[in-house]
Image 1 (cartoon, rainbow, N blue to C red):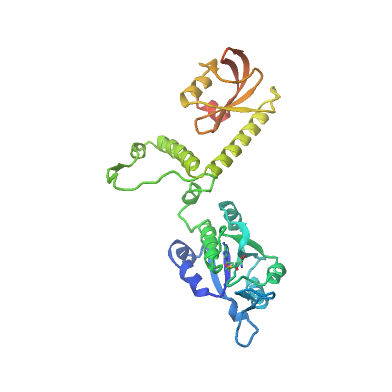
Image 2: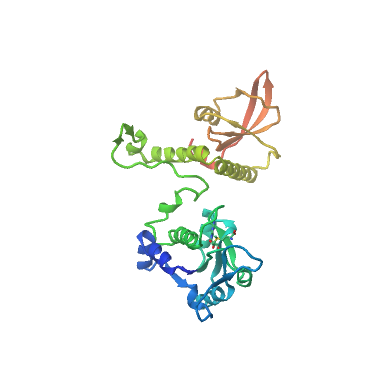
Length: 320
Ligand code: SAM
């Protein structure tokens, strides 16, 4: 992949992308990153690149011509048409999902604005998409371009040691990562969770999965809710694919402890206390909201409901 940054401050960019992991990725030929000085393309004899804004205002506006010629010259260096992006506080906010999508491209050209911004016409003429790094305003597009470059570069094969290095990280699957610990085992009286020292890979990965959900729920309830919604929708899709017997359209949910879920799965629980009605389809989830089974309420006695287990995913069946 090739990334070109069009900027008034190429040295600022080069200093950053030539360092550390991305710098090693460039040296080892896994990615190409270049910074180009827009000023070099100015047709003005003094190499000016900005002028006062029509209609007044405090700051200067970057003119269209140098940016346009710079981007056109860089485009010609690409083997396939690159995706052109203007880093702008008015753009779509950068997410890991967008980063993953951009990482599939052969080439990107990133335009950095400065001062009051850039002449609108050049963005229109280049059909540049706008990407923001957040709802705040910086003095220039260089830091946003470097953020985007770093995030995209680390997903290129070879830049990180393997896919695990990024696929278990925060945001990749919609969740935040579990907490990490290193030596010593006890620091200022704080111990590393025992399970991480057990050497039992299954237990460790169960703990990591649980913590990942807990951390997301606590720190980013918005992400957690979106994740649960997605999991539940997928679960219902799988249920509908797997059976033709039940004409279930509406589902309610009910949280259960791991112990209770075990009883349900093994058929050792036939009734439980719940405010559910006969004929209701209920998705039983674990305490963190992950869907596990679907039951149909078959009867009611006082506060207790009787039910039939009508769906357990293949993975659960195999764990019996
Ligand atoms: N006048 C512009 C506005 O209000 O929308 C802001 C211009 S800003 C001071 C100068 C340049 O910094 C922009 O052209 C853009 O390239 C970059 N920039 C500032 N904040 C940014 C953000 N949150 N995301 C991406 N780029 C940003």
